Length: 454
Image 1 (spheres, rainbow, N blue to C red):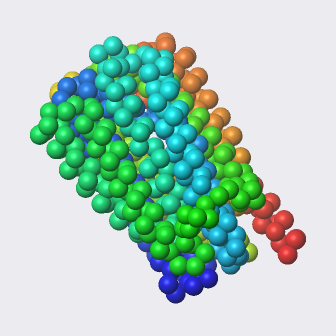
Image 2: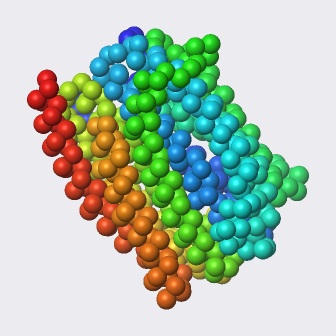
């Protein structure tokens, strides 16, 4: 491979802390920008429209996630497979993987668009969306899902770049697309008098810009990483590996989002002001979660390459460093926002009643969100070693099942917004204990087996 011309990172040699931070920072910025596509929609609607419109735009996160998470998980599988080939210096494997990823991006995007447009209205009705919100929510989602092919092209392309250590260009692409989104939101809503349809159209266009930039870069990538449209196609061996790792990760995300839909349904039962307040606070939960997600992706990429190269000691160091950095960085962000909650939330609403519920969610959930690092980093380390089913099952049990039990038992008996929110920290602690314990067992077994076969 022509490493001198690559914009990637050498993950196999040298000090780890600095490289992991350099790898993660653009991912954090990228996540914030990606979330800003929705957050800007929420902010513009919250400032220039009604609380019903704010609820319609801001409460759809769990529903969108349940549809896209399977394919986001498969993109993680692609990341692991390509990174492992890089560690083994297998150029032909990289070429086959890039070809497979390109085909998967298009197929998944078209499939998601079709499914999203078909099931939107029934899902919103099932979620007990209030009558004064459901029409606006359906209109927003109907337009939003038209941009799914663009979103998948970007996500799979970014996975390819992350596998070789390049997290800067996905950030630059999102930066341009984010600026386009802000400009179009303001144009459509404040100048042309549009409502939820305007912010949805702006998001679709900006996702299209994002995808176009990513394709342009990948087509000019040197050596085996270059995207060749004429050679796009599914290679069974690479697809199988990606699915083995990616499908459990994606199913975990889908089940996780399903549990959150039940929670959102419970939130919806409190009325539009609570929905709007929860939606405003959710933006900051998503922003801070991207810090954890960035170190998760660093864990996957660094572990995959070093495991492929047979460097077990470095894999152990990657886990410890990523866990420490994830906890510290996310805790600082959580506590800062919680400290000045009303100031941050004022970007999304000026309604006093909506603000009250938004602040409640920040104090009960966001303040200790860093605890989720325990199971997210541990699960990512296992995926980097090729074990994706174990963290999926434990996360489903520790987080999703427990949340459903809480919604239909404790929440029914003590029907308040505060009681509903307490389920988040409880499930983080339980799931963290389960997944961290599993990681140490898997790590010992995998490394011992690898030594015996060498």
